[in-house]
Each structure stands twice: as C-alpha cells, then as structure tokens.
Length: 281
View 1 (spheres, one colour):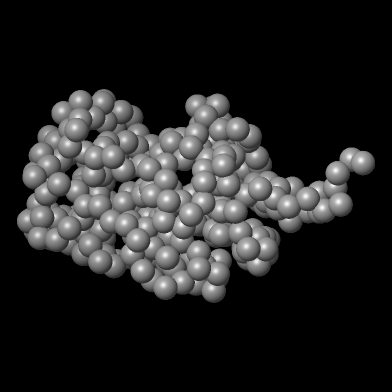
View 2 (cartoon, one colour):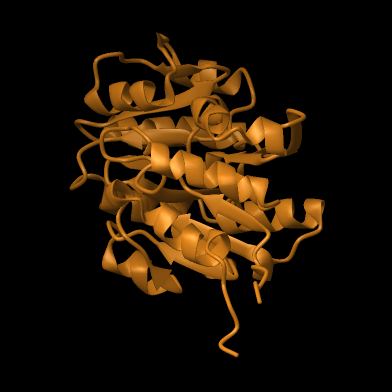
C-alpha cells in the first residue's frame, strides 16, 4: 500500500544548497522540485539573498504556477510568488546604519553594501566580494558618494560588510555585543557579515509563513548548508544539511545528504516524497 508523505512544504536555501559551485542549478534538481509541487507539496525559497536576487530561481522552479513562496533576506521579506503579495516585511533601524558604516571604515580592507530595489548599493564598484554579490543576484552595482544617506533614504532590510574571512569573526563578535537588542549580526558566508533587523532569522520567518498558510513545523522539510541555516534546520520537522556543510551545521540537522554539486536535494526528496513507500506487510 502506498503511504502518503507527512511533509507538506519544503524550505530550501540557495547558495551551497540548491545552487551548485558554478552558480547553476542541476536540471535534475529543477525537475524534481517541479514534480514535488505537482504532488501538492509547497516549495519556499529560504535565502539570505535580496528578493530580486531570487527571482530567476523562483521562476526556474515554476513557483508562480504552484503558489510557492520566496523568503528573502533570511526572513526579512516573504512573498507569495503566485500572487506577488508581500506577506511579511521588516526593515533595519535607520539609527544603527551610521554605527555599522563607521565600524566598517575603521577596518582596513573592508567595505559595506546594501540592496535597494533592483540594485546593489556601495561606495565602491571594484571590490571582488561586492562584484560576486552583484553577479549571483543578477543585480547591477550603483556607486554612491554617501552610503549612510543612501541607506537611510529608504527602508532597507540589511547591510553587509565584506572582507577577508580572517578579518570578520572579531568584528562579528564586537558588533553582536554592541547591537544586542537592536539588530542581528551573523556571517552568511566567510566573507559576508550581515546586519539585519533584530529578531530576523530563517526559523522565525518560516514560523510566520507557516502560521499564515495553516501548516505546522512537523510538516516542514528544510535544506541548508550555512550557519544562517542552523535555526531553520533545528526548527523544521526534518532538517537536512548538505554534504558540503561544516560539521557544526551537520550536527544541527536531523540528516545529512549529498553535496550541492551531487544533487543532494534530489536524493532526499525522491526518498521522502516521490518514491512509492510500501508497508512491510
């Protein structure tokens, strides 16, 4: 007898999880996620990227056709991709932006960026890490003379300080202590230090989404590979770490799958949802 999967929604990180090292997505993975949605299971992108930076992936997965969801900025914004209705949004306290900027400027070799509308905003255009963000999000860089003024002129969800991985951990700790109760500070990549509104993480974003659509955490499968994925891996009914994850992330998950370059997402979804499961009697 065929058994029905208990899982009704999949939350999936992009970089290092769905997206391969060459910034592509396996056609097998795309096909699998479309077939999962055809079974009635919802798919939610759960990424630290800006909303526009996820759009081409959401479209490739046909989220619009299946009323899937995009949770961007680590939970700072949530959209129903079918209706394009914004279900949730939080913005960074504008008063902390000068402090973030000044902390960045005190450190040699660091720069700061943010996202406004469909652009990457920074005072420099030739930094490798900022160019990398521009490339993977498919968003052009707009150079500004005064970052603080530009960032304070509209509601932004986060600032990112970029720099060599060896430089960021000490700054992360110092800013976590100073901004406690005002903003969250974490590394989404070894070279990206993100500053977001207080209380934002992927678990809290998914909790909000589940409440809005009437599903429970037990019905959620979450896939991730980064430190910013740990909260959602621990929150989900089933947390799946990618094989390319650090050991700390793997320990936070319920199971570990293959790497992002080896269709790790497919490996789990086929066994959980797509393969017929039979009772042993």
